[in-house]
Length: 94
Image (cartoon, rainbow, N blue to C red; front, top):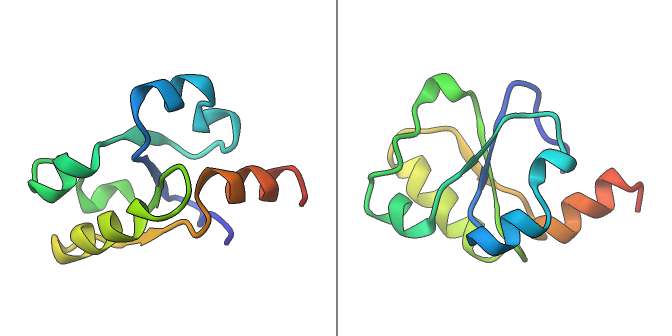
């Protein structure tokens, strides 16, 4: 999947994984860290002016659920299939 121009990447990973491999090293798009629990609670603070949201997690499982919640909140959101390994592979040309 290509990251759409003007999108914001939502990083669902826990703090330790975000610190070990920041998504900013894999994309020039803005990245926001938001927990799945915050999204489930509707307390995420994300707004349509952020552009389309691309939700990514470590393996691509939780991001689908988060994207569905965000879509239900009226946002343009989609999960990045395969998670961080897929994004890393795309960036590295694999």
